[in-house]
Image: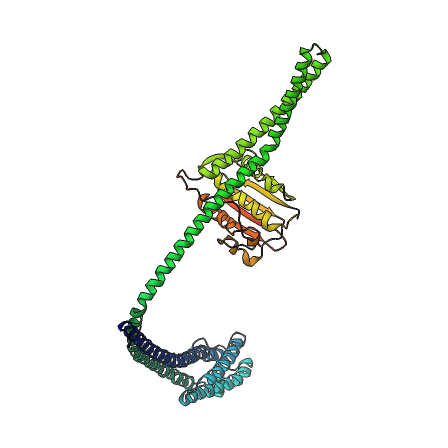
Length: 506
């Protein structure tokens, strides 16, 4: 025997299928009605546009005909020719009016499809052709110097037939205007009728869709909660990855310190050990009374050389430690301060020396001395570090030589331009926007996380309040252009999370 829970579930499924079926039928009917309505309206609109275009063309043709016939046109100039007998003055105008009338009447004959209109046009054309024949009879009489009375006796000028025919044709234009208005009213009435029917169907469809929406609203809410949890988990994972990358950056910095400081400290230790051995040797000779003047002189020379080596290398180690310390403080603190751009670029590159020694790529820096930047040095260091490591990882193959150029210039008193370019393999145009997306990388198998250029873009545009543009072609290297304000606002800008380089590039 089925349980109440299974019966309830079956009932719910049955109701859901019924609502879905009803909604589907209503939607199909609505789509059918919409298709039929659209087809009918398109046909009516096409007929209306054709009718309107034809009426407009007919009106334009009639206007041109009236211009060629009426005042200032053929009949007016024909009368002036007879009265004034000035053939050079009026002959060209009359000929142009005759040609224009014939052209427009031919055009009008192709447009008119009502027999009454065609009859009126035929009468007008016959009348004007009769006038044209009289004009040809009058031309030699005018040229021969005949008087107006003599010319009128031959041509019998009477403009009433032409004006009557023109008025009859114009009266047909009023009829066409009334027909156009009637057509527009018919289309308007059809639109109202179809709109009412469509509104009723839309109401039915809305009711059915509302019932279906209520049935599935709970599922949508559950899906929304699942998506929110997934987004929160993704954000948490990204934050954790940021922290891991930050620790990795500090670890790499410590490794760089150890690697760079090892050499001067080793030299200092060797010099101190050698000096100690020489001191003991000289002391033994002195105690035994065997110390000669030459031996003492040799000891002093050895002592001077050893102390000089210890002093120089101790200073070098101190400078290295101070440089690494400043960068580490900038990366972890994120405080705003004023710094020398050229000197700071050298310090950043110095911290990257362990990576640079493994690559034959040469870095060239062109930065004017004493160029100051009032900004976030930690963010600036992270941008430069990510760009360098991005180029080493993606622009060049292992053991491939090349060049990285870092050029800095002051555009004006408020802006600074930093251009970072390489002569590596470049970036395909279709990837120019994607390289700044998070987690996009083409070298994931080689350690790229796809965050490097995304972080560079965020730091430049948000923390440093600048802009970042990319120009690259495959085989021609890549150029990143940064426009930065030379001084940030007095408001403290929160420093972004600073990561080690894990970028995306082809």
